[in-house]
Image (tube, rainbow, N blue to C red):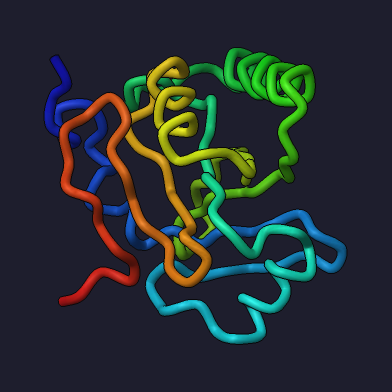
Length: 153
């Protein structure tokens, strides 16, 4: 049985405030508090990420802080798993607006259902999903209605 988001991660209300920093060359930053700009969408398309993809992390399972070493190992394991399975992915830092907190994540081109299953396997509260136009927050180990971003007030 899945549970509510804030039972797992007290930072749940902050998820819609995330800034995504894609490690493209040059880097691309997308502020999830705003609708993606056409130039950002064009950059995603040009980088092969114009259709559906997930942004997910292996860090801090169930919203519980792990050591830097444990998180780094989980990230290496995720990268190896995605590479072995043949998925196209790129590193993304998912950061608070002030940059004080960032989680090493990946943008990975895969089916939404597979992405949620992977996030559940990694014991993640939620994923970000890009549908080709908008970003969403989708629950993984938690029950949550899909939340389209930017969040309306």
